[in-house]
Length: 277
Image 1 (cartoon, rainbow, N blue to C red):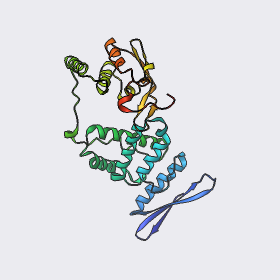
Image 2: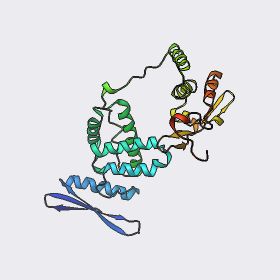
Image 3: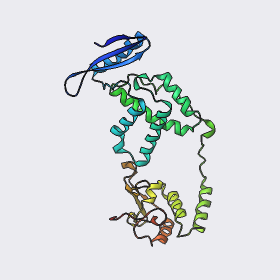
Image 4: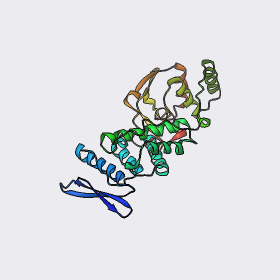
């Protein structure tokens, strides 16, 4: 059983936890203003013991828990660009929610949402919230927290910073293609890349990674991506992103104007070909 001890004007909880060495160790947390708060914390710790939950070191800050969770569960499966987003979430938590995991509840998370989201676009708030929610759901499964305080919290964002996507019409796309073709210059391959994006729907990194060996007849094979951070090839976003696309003969003819680049089609403007490719 947990011990609840009066320490001056506050209360302290002391719990025995089985360590990796098979021995019992004492974990303490002090500073509870009321005995009821201390009892609630003690009950949570006892629940973790009986259900096999993960017992955190008392006072573990949520940003640090999020960072450890990312490194354990996500880091090996995401791109550098996605990893940067997780790091941005960590920095936001450090600034706005730098409190112990056990102290977070729906009210405190709502305050974080207000403080963080009030001057940011909906897309940013939604992305950050979804990554935090994934962390919290895993924390619940591991027995670290016992209520999903994210699920019941509405997003807060600055509507003036929220962009509306305005798609081009078919006629507008035709005019854009005509302009790009007429004003193209083989020494500046950006217009060729935009044309490739229009004809294939490929992502920027996928286009940057294209090699002549990926073009066969009137098809383009998307099988890798380019990492701007490491200046090297990397896998596509997921397995379903690997695909072969039938394209217009005009695009193939335009790309062949760049055949002075021996391996990567768009190497001249963005990067050099890595050794051994």
